[in-house]
Length: 177
Image 1 (cartoon, rainbow, N blue to C red):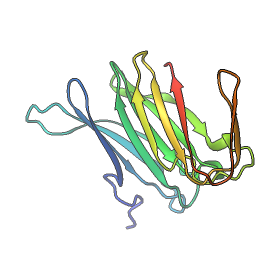
Image 2: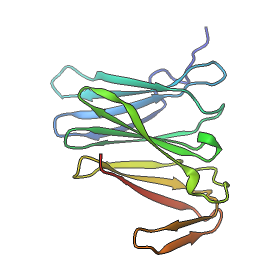
Image 3: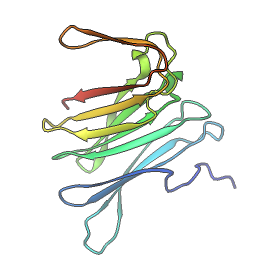
């Protein structure tokens, strides 16, 4: 018998304190070679003596043979957000943000890719991610790309910012839902 995940309980975790309990997420890394999906689990501990309870799980297919994942967990007023970075996504890196609400993970997710790297040379977008809930039932997301491709970004005020290859870039995204 071959274990289809590196560690069934999770090899990548994050932990937060919410208004009503402690929450933890764990990712079991799947294997494209064995045809097994990545799996994220979310747990809650209400500190009522009943220990941790599994709230829900979500799976998705690996992008390649060597996915490198990172994770961040945030609690908002009614929702929990789980950001999962993957430097191997579509060869340029990416990040998915899953929303947990109404006692389950939503069917859809937000996906942000390293496509901001204009020369296609980004190889580590999503190496580190951090998600924070905002006050308008959305989230702020920070994604690192330490080996970025050259990028020119136009800001909301019309100004442009350019950065050369492999300078190290941190991107900030905001969601309103």
